[in-house]
Image (cartoon, rainbow, N blue to C red; front, side, top):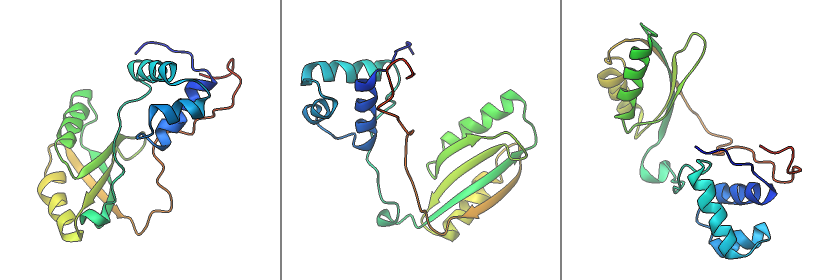
Length: 165
C-alpha cells in the first residue's frame, strides 16, 4: 500500500463513499466541490492506495431468514503463531462466521456468527466450532437487538490538511 497524504477533498470522498458506495461519480464530485474527472482519478488513487477495500450491499439478515446473531468468545489450547493462523484459515471457510477478531486477554478470538435460528447455531457450534482443532472453550452471547451498526471509521472531513493522516 503506497503512502498517500489525505486532504479535505479525499476525506470528503471517503466519507461519502463509506455512507453510500453506490453514489455516482458526478454526485460524489459535486459534494467534494470538484469536477467529475479529477474526482474519478482521486477515487481510483484511494482504491489503489488501499483506503477503499471494496464495495458491498448492506443486507437485512432477518429479511433473508437469519434471525440469530451470536458473538462467540473462543479460547484456544495453543497460541503459537501456526495454530492461530490455522484457526483463522478454518474460520474463513465457515460462511456463518461474518467477522473474526483476534483479541488480547483471556479470549483468543471473537466471532460474529449469523444463523437462521438457535438450533442452527447449536449445530454449527457442536459440529464445527467446538470440534475444531485446538479449540479449548467457546462462550456464546446471543444478541437481543442492535442499537447501532455503523461500518467503517469516523472520518473527520473538516480537519486542516496538515493535521490529517
